[in-house]
Image (cartoon, rainbow, N blue to C red; front, top):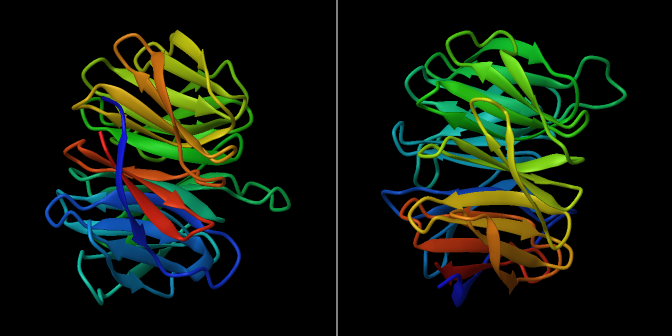
Amino acid sequence: MTLALTGHISLPEHKGKGGFDHAAVHAASGHVYVAHTANDAVDVFDRQRHLFSIPNLSGVAGALVSDEAQLIFSSNRAENTVGIFAPGPDPEVTKVAVGVRPNGLAYDHGRKLLLAANVGDPAIAHSYTLTMVDVGARATRSSIEVPGRTRWTVFDPDAEVFYVNISDPAMIVVVDAKKPTEIARTIPIPAAGPHGLDFDGATRRLFCACDAGVLVTLDARSGKVLDEAPLGGVPDVLFFNRQRQQLYVAIGDPGVIDVFSTSDMKKIATIKTEPGAHTTALSPAGDRLYAFLPHTHRAAIYET
């Protein structure tokens, strides 16, 4: 079994330009938090309906859930901040200033350390950065300059490192959480535009979806390329389902999800979504995948 469509959830209509971006699922409630960039808000819904929205998050691009900390993080690209708030309606949102146009988020709960990967601005020198935020103090701890525009990022709790995709030059930068003031090492990527990123802790593999239409699998320790597989277009969000041993790669054009078996890295299905649907969210139990449909402002629900 790959993905079976079970229904749709209507979300608020777009008020401005853009659509949906990164999303995450809160395990305790089952609520899905999705960055609704067009509305400067995070929309929250369950399996039946839209529940509420968290407003005043300008240009929100990322939503990340920490079930350990019982916190939600947002990257607010148009105001150069991250938001920190508790699950549930009408939260008090604390904002912390970060770098230029934050996007990707990853969190080390043990150190209460949030990494914000800042997209930057080509017109602003030295604006391609990572901001390390002390979540306990609600304050910036350090800033690390990186070689190019950032994409997504993940945290490896066993190795205690952050991995961050850099679009150009094509690479993954590695930051040691024990020394969050510099790049520890870099991993070259043999395809243009590293974008979506996820990690398999059991096999120590990184899965990197690249704009060149290639899925690259790497050994996280050595950086060795283990596999390269073609994709059905330019990818964005990528999720690894640990329970099903499958990988889901969202592709906005033509609007599909490529499904791979991670046992042999073979594509096992291509699921049609909607043109422009470039982002998804995976439940912590691995039993549901949500795809966000910008033209019809809905979330499609798939059983895995």
